[in-house]
Image (cartoon, rainbow, N blue to C red; front, top):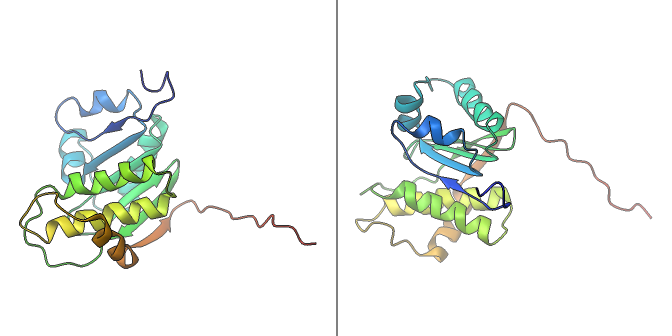
Length: 169
């Protein structure tokens, strides 16, 4: 329905219906690695395994995919371009809700028309900051924005070709 009316849809769920819901081609999907392994019955032992599942998501019509893995690095894709993201290092106190905080940053970035790298860094920072407190999802946007400089994004697989088309006159 969302695709028919050119609206963004976000899938963040797990369970037996995950595979069926992926076939509906949401705009965005977020899962943690354990959910993907368990419910899609795939292995995620290597960077190539992550690239394969991200590419499968894209072939299913999903434009933005995020597979987080707690405080460890995570993998994401925009169309058929894949990235490995290193989270900022924080002292973990309570990770409950960090996936939700992460996704809130992604949704915020889409709503505010931020560029991909910026909203991925914001999501990562929000998830990390959430894990550094006892309270769940009570992170300040300003604190997360200050932490985004500690997030690194690396292209993996297919590379984007940048063309400089600026005037030379």
